[in-house]
Length: 404
Image (cartoon, rainbow, N blue to C red):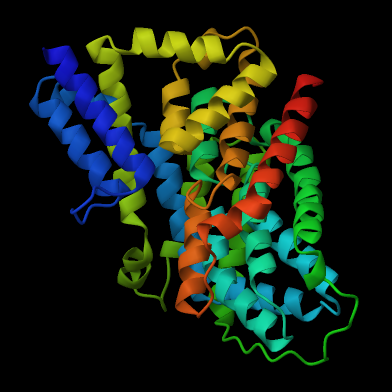
């Protein structure tokens, strides 16, 4: 009876996380994960001490530190400044599409994809409207490129952070394997969006002088860029990933001008709660003994690069990518080629997020932010480019990693 109840709570929690809410209740993914974790402790699926032990502090510290860095970069106007300068270079619709994809992809590899799309979406809508174009193709490019670009590094998205900490793969080595996947993937995304929306990319030139005002706080901008550079140097030098990020965050918290309350108000605490709850929920799978059957199925799916790509991509779209990584985490160390398997898991769970509008948080941020600016990116509209982009990038990623 206890095992059935535990399994029911875990299944209900993962279903809520996948959908993003429970009907009739004002609960988001963070609260669903937290309530599920507490319920599992209350029924004795695991003790409070075991719940504490299930928390991966390295991942939580890395997430927190990156959010501190991103908040400072946002406050000083870094993302807006960079976006306006890049978008002003565009002289044709094709150039604008390419610049949106490259800017979104490169920045997402360094500063978390969710932050990048949050900053870029209003600017992309504004530029498209100014030049008399439909914003939809460019928003599709922004969302899919952010996911693709974030594949390249451990700090590009939350699931990569989790994999980077769990695998112990050095930052430079991780990027060396997955940077080509991301770079070619961005080119594939450009091709797909161009073909799907061919009529939007007529070869006429834009009027000169796009008006994109932006406010920049230069002292904080300089400090934030220095802290970011120090973090990247430390990562490439082999410093532990959470410590490198936390060092950069600490530099930014030593300040005479910016009140720490302003920074902490902008931290996405719900994401930290979400991760904490999921750590406990997946920890309950192991302590209850349910993991043996589930992990056996996942292990069967995970034989070979192509099998692991298909299995992890499918699971990511069923229960979301972070829970999928947590489910695979105990399986991967038992696979024949452990390092390659971790890299495939990072690639597949990230690129799978482009399949539907609900596939990643970045997609939802783009859709919601665009809606507030009068543009609706609908579910079926997203599928027109999202499905082919996902298929071709996953195939490329699996092909590349199968030959390394």
